Length: 165
Length: 103
Image 1 (cartoon, each protein chain N blue to C red):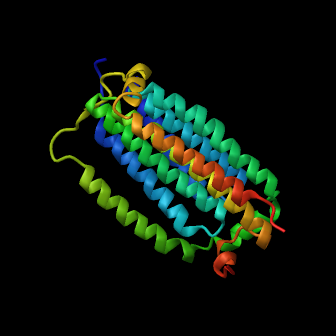
Image 2: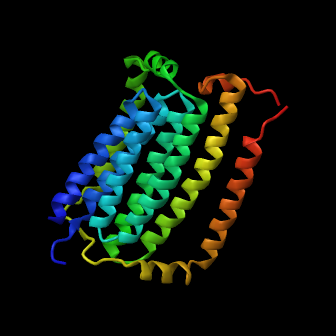
Image 3: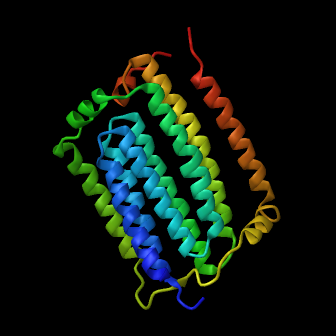
């Protein structure tokens, strides 16, 4: 049951990610990206990481993607963008980067593939309580650094988003 | 729980998603689509952390996942502000339009 969920969610994640990369309509690409994130969240749940899966849905699919959708709505990208993307997406332009990415992926898979038997993972569920204890125990300094990063992001977004005369 | 999933398959999934995001960043000229590619790449890195944490049954993988999520939020804020500025100045999301920066 868990195995079926894992592999089907992986397939959904890969297919929707391909659709994000080749899509010409920004809104459709964003919706495919949301599907991809939900599939990754399912993978997290099957791997015994419910906290990560919930955060993926709440913060990523819920907050960050809504930000993207708002920006697309603000920019009012319509039929014009789709036509322009179609013009840019010629086959010749696709070959080089796709080939390079495929070579990198093949190398990664060769490195990751085990010589012997597969290693089991996710046999034990990591509860949010364990994550919280680790986060506010040994990783406390990194939590502070993350808050500084968010403050920096806030200031930079405010500065860059201003109207300039 | 009796049946555990193979760690390698999870890592290969993360690697495949990373390669797809990289291809997206390399092939696209639209700034918004390039940002989506970057988001895919970071998401796959976060997934690799979760898989690693599940392999050793420790919470550290998910701690790193939370931190990557924070980074993604900050990156999305700054990146989308830049996209809006790009559109405001050039009336286009073509990143090549910003190749001539004046000051």
